[in-house]
Length: 364
Ligand SMILES: NC(=O)c1ccc[n+]([C@@H]2O[C@H](COP(=O)([O-])OP(=O)(O)OC[C@H]3O[C@@H](n4cnc5c(N)ncnc54)[C@H](O)[C@@H]3O)[C@@H](O)[C@H]2O)c1
Ligand SMILES: [Zn+2]
Image 1 (tube, helix red, strand yellow):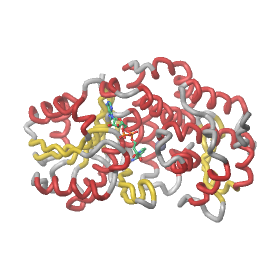
Image 2: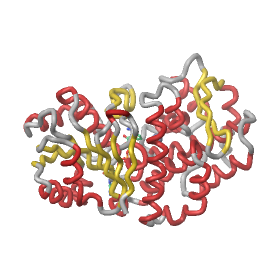
Image 3: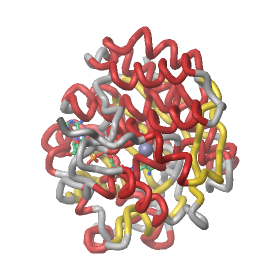
Image 4: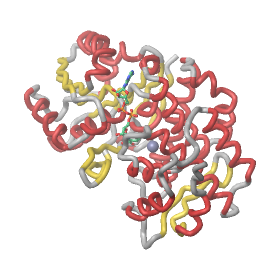
């Protein structure tokens, strides 16, 4: 059963294919979508070892000339220097403006490959083949592409939509459990921001989802992509509404940055942020405690963190929030839930209301 969604962006609309075993038909799908016959597939050694052979066979069977490019595994390699090496490989392979660049991997591979696709020859067709849960439900959809800079994460980039997204849910079966949990953090986010029914489904199906049940995963990926696609279609370049996808991310980003991106996976950091934002919403009288309790309980049941790590104090978090490029005059934008399934963009949160959210950790 393949589920096909469309991100509606007029002439730049594109399909998202979701299903088990789709990798073996990747070549045909690419052929239908682009005219160029030379294809540069960017991946990393971890993913290539697992899925290189099947991708290879599939593209060859479709009559495509496949060129591989490997980047080292890890966020620290999402850099301009690595992107520059990818341009070299694209030139060496003789890619012209009709030839696609394909990202086979998680969000790191997807972001840097998209950046290269957006800029090589001022833009060539881009195909996302996400292989992590986070990439399937989030980073492969919506066209944010970027590399990191010493001054910050993802601050060199563009909006550049793919032509096609192929999410083979079978690839999730080799993911470490911790990566699955982190992806579930983003999935919970979609329930809170846009879909109470989906949130309730998550409450009822969390164990099956965490255990990697294929049908359960495929459904969660589908609904998540549906929600993200609708938000992106409404506000592609984040002038307003798209900000709701940042629920949990205000504090999440601060935590990631304060821990040098080492301690937490992204989905873990935003889980802490989602719980904090829900508590803040209660304090501000926007959310009832029952709803807040449901959010916190689901995050916790998913095995995701709900509190700041001991040793990280609130003043540090606050200072980091105020350094954030989105903070203005000490006031910080939060995405706050008004109910399970509905959030509001609150651009004007004063730091004084945040302090009580983070009681100092008492050391016995
Ligand atoms: N563009 C966006 O809208 C957007 C949104 C969210 C996150 N991101 C970016 O995504 C990145 C994080 O992505 P991620 O969580 O996928 O991390 P990742 O790409 O580092 O992948 C996590 C790990 O899983 C491995 N892996 C990938 N697929 C696998 C598989 N099928 N089986 C076994 N191992 C596999 C990878 O090699 C890596 O070690 C960050 O750079 C973040 O900035 C982008
Ligand atoms: Zn995120």
